[in-house]
Length: 313
Image (tube, rainbow, N blue to C red; front, side, top):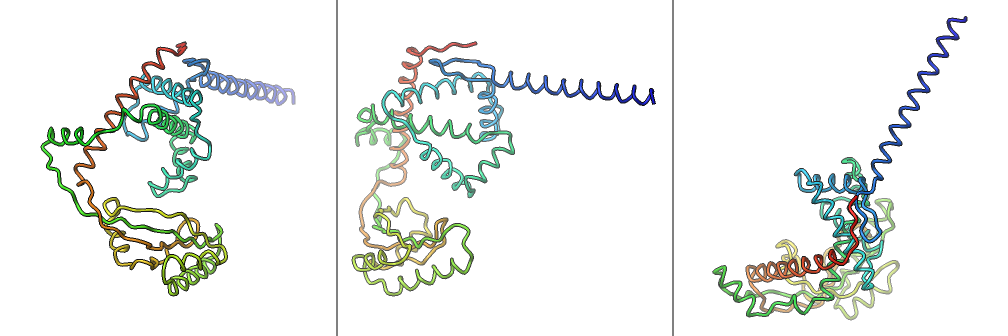
């Protein structure tokens, strides 16, 4: 019995020592993670911030991330967000969440699925959302303060095209005037509910005789939303979608489609032929604007860094 008591006592001590060691290790890991590397105008950048951003960069670029470059990037983001507050250009959480969801949609994922994919790589979704917020506010600030200097004249574009030996040719495009009509279906509804709404949409489509009367009739229907007018340029649309819109007469509806919110159709309320830049000229214009924006952005950030209190630990 004494021997058993001694063994139990030793086992208890070993268990206690192991537990203590685990606690110390966890505490040490937490301390390291929260270790402040840089203070930017009184706001900290921790080792955890850097670690998370490095994982995100490695995931998105499939290349090893440079730690010092990541630290500089995080410093810039602190300055961007602070400058946004100074000029009243703050981005709401709802806007960030919407941009995050749109990013997921482009990858054919929901916001929850994107969050889960990031978590599998050890990345908290807040890391990506912080980057989104900084870039959104920076776009607003630079465009708002330096919009005039960012504009490109026709001569600027002509010179850029000449330097690249690109011929200027106008192309014919069609502008479609559309009114989205949405038959709302609550999330998680049964298939029978969705099919019922589709039949209601088909019935409206069959009796739709023009945008003025048809849109008025659509507004009288149960749980139906007629959204604001949108104009789409054929040059910006996929060939399949252009073919669909070309086939629908003015004053008629496109076929019902299932969306995240329910059943959606588009009333084609107008089509207008116009001339537009050829794709190459459009690309030259976008590239030149991006270069000008980047130059202004670098000058702006350099000035902010010069005025900031940056304390590297």
